[in-house]
Image 1 (cartoon, rainbow, N blue to C red):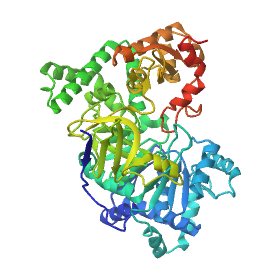
Image 2: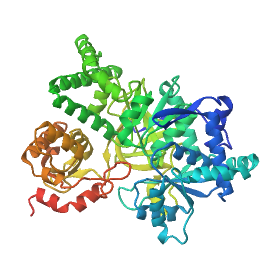
Image 3: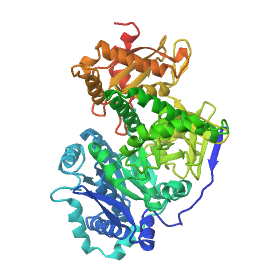
Image 4: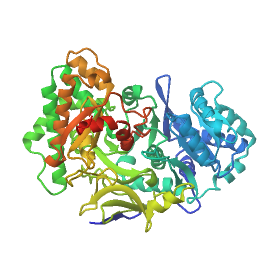
Length: 605
């Protein structure tokens, strides 16, 4: 199949925008809890009426401060409830929101502020406000900066000033925007070159939300449905999910402190989660290492094998390719549920019925593992340019290893060279002030994703790699690095694996170590604690990494296997310039910065 599409299930009325989702909810169910805010260790519900009141007051404050429809408002903060207030209040005032990752450098902030033409900035706290202030030194004139938390919070000051703005003035500003108008300028995280500002419209967010609500009704319309957001709200995926939850009436909580995530999951008890693959990888690796620490690794491995086998049998049956799990397999799963699986589910809060995995590729083996232990994984696919979700698996139609079916109002096409092309309700109308990128990014109404993929006979999409990442060895063998890298990251010691081999005689890899995993591994194996530099040459560490490479090599043909590897002496992070804020690897930057290591792998001093 070269093209698949799903018909639109719902439409937003003409002349409406995102804010109408909250207005409608507040009118129909004013007492419904839409958010929960953690204060002093306890979660406090925020009703639709309370949210509407807080958003309206802040929007009036923005209008009083001179914000006009179409103005750009930048936001730099980690994930928190106040981020949501600013987002919604800006839309009520008719403004366009420009998210900035809270880890961004002053140089990155300066580029986004200048390119977007921001009129004012919200910063989470005094520290982020300082970053913003430093970034404005090269701007023609400084911008007002309002803090969102801490002493002298700008939100409280603005809400107080909004008392001078009438309800009619607010309504005039709120209704000035339609589905065709920009709601946000979302800058790509930039694995290569400068970030590009994607114009995301009210229609992109809102129509995607009402259609996803119907498409995933089993999750989103479940009574008592609630989710905990811990991904950065500067990422379009997290914000798209927030609008989806608003449309569906799903209660949303936030946690911006990853150190408190496990505790927050246990007290909030979400029914579904949006998760990136790295979270699954770390949970699995940590759980296995704990089992090894306690002398129970054989039990864990048997439990993992059972979970994977059970999930694969169920998956095969759903595809019409098998008869489902055998009686013996079912019995083993019941036993391991008591010994292993229940504790793993408890780590996610104990009530998670589904997880949705996005942002990057997830190993099918990990998807089968978590599905098998009772935390079903629905993998989806999308980009900043598609307002995140473009395809997703469904609870009753889930093919593990694929990224699912097109969302309603979306068409997926496979080009002659294998590139995935998408058009539909979520696709950006273009890049801000970037005609060159617009010309290169679109063809015949479709967005060129740069990803390679295939569609099966049922319309399920499988992503096979990136056009730019596909390696061609000196022997002419095409190698997709993604599956190998996914498998490498499953090991406790490995944070990142960079598979190389373009124009080379064989495939090799650069391995970046995980400091937390290294520390745990050293304790388990009775070794003195090693830093990353020392670990790079430690014989025991190298032997363990060889086992990780051997595991990955079992997934591919001999010609595609990793023949040699080198361990990097530094961590690959956003701060080092090798990862984007959304945890995507900057492959070209890694290869460029570690060119000496690459040459040594191929026998050049």
